[in-house]
Image (cartoon, rainbow, N blue to C red; front, side, top):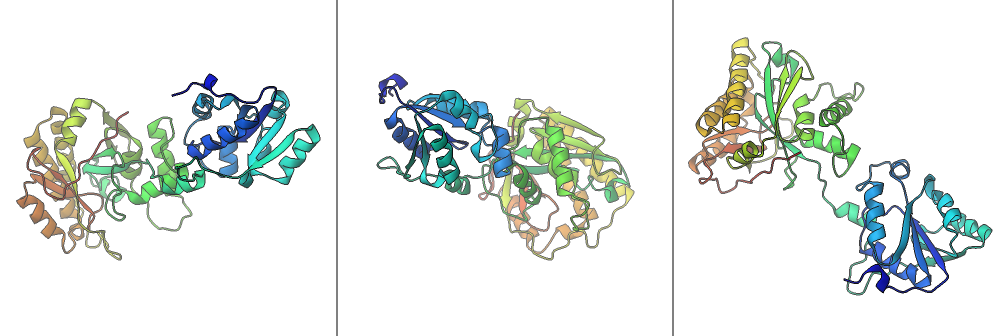
Length: 395
């Protein structure tokens, strides 16, 4: 690979271009290459704040990362973060660099930019988007439509339903969730918290931002449960927590919407063990009009069975004890079904029988049930044919 000094440009000319370069691609490099034919190329990069204000979204890469990547391209003499705002955020950069030529793509040109250059005696040049020979034409807009979101999914392991006060009012207890990498596009209405994940995507688009994970979970919970959204119910906090908190988490509910305490496991040995003994089996999406709360029968005894099973499941996972894990896990699901028998919609039992015959040791429906995915426990060797391995998100 040639270093930057290997590229020669006309002497005594400074060329300036400006843009976001948030999803750096071959089209940007081709543009830099062509612009550099006119002289030494200087690049102004839109700040994180400018992009948020202009495009109403978070950046994929921070301004520091974008500056680093752009500077590394051999056609670029130097690059700076523009200090201004809006479409003309580059004004101060131009006045400092004092370029001879200002280059834009035809779709990035404007009369305002042309007049700006004319006032300063800067030559203004518009270039067509021409990809490097043999490469596909690229634009950030098209890439954004193709790139899959890296927002995690969540799986609920045990104790879930306890995050609803109409359950925990009969007895406090823990829900256990794991945040998993989006290694597959899981079905909507499949118990993988896709509705909460879609809410997260509407805020953060492609990935969770940096920051305290519990704070992110609170923000997502509040965003999804806006008091004036008219949906008439509060989505359980386990969904936001399961998406935002890496590793394995358990959260304690005592007639509250938000847990009073949270505990987490990040030990890679334990997470590896858990990954090697659980898998997802897709069934069918929960049918439209299906109400899993219809006919619910919640009693203190049934809630106690749920919370006790969750306690035993957590301890078994910590001890990496498969036999105890299987028992606690299955008891937790059975306790859910005892309270919410409508979880077992037509067709679910057929899938349970199938995975059982293929070696599953225990099983439960993810989320509220009624369809979706089975999260099964296996011994590491006898794995059902339709099973999908999962990857728990690490810190």
